[in-house]
Length: 318
View 1 (tube, rainbow, N blue to C red):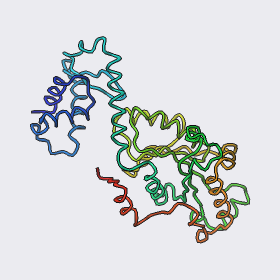
View 2 (cartoon, helix red, strand yellow):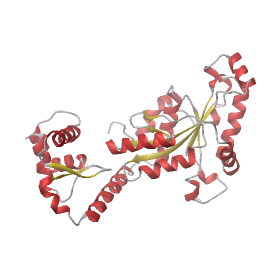
View 3 (cartoon, one colour):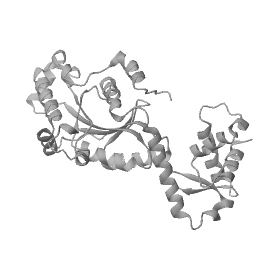
View 4 (cartoon, rainbow, N blue to C red):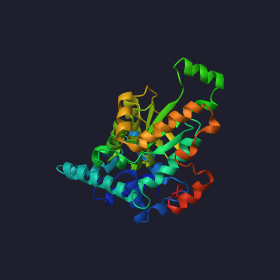
């Protein structure tokens, strides 16, 4: 059996259009995956690619696309079955996306990911940051829903002490052109089509004040529509995107000047953020990497990270 024959058989038995991952899961449930005999690590992606090529090159292709974001495949001979069921199909797509999010929310919690991000941005040459977790509950405004759109999850500072000679740093300071950069991060467990825009615009809302703001997810759905939409939003709003599972910066943030008004508001509202800025000011005045008050920032686990991941049942290989 070829991949295209497998795809056709799966869609022939399906009740509704399916995306490529759902098609492969159905194939496994039907025992069809064993008939293909593929030894590749990502047979579902191979199948998807072959369907696209078949639709592009064959005018008599048996396949068609009935929805995007996510892309859902169907058979042309069954297309009439969908007439009058558009709202039902849309509901099924929404339910499928929400079910995917819920399945990813099992196990570890969002807060468990903080040490992963702290470790990543401390060791990645693009960042080299000292970070602090911001607890929205320490804010003077106790409206939890509102705080989620005001306060970032984690903030970080890059000290340029090791980037330049001390005399260069002194000159930059005297010229009022310091090279310190403050970063802001909004953290999520999983991103797909269903929650992408809400997650991204939450990051826009609570991280645009910083020199660089990032939306960080442990896992981002490996889907062309998701990646293309993130690329579009990044180009429009400048918030970068990081995936922790792959330790990858998907899209870099656009660097800009600090929004002083918002920064001042966060200092006045949130005790954690005020402490962070206070410690940053003290460490800048030392002008010495050996005198940074590391204990005032979130701990960088280093060699302890693997043990921590096991304790939280976070398996980056899955």
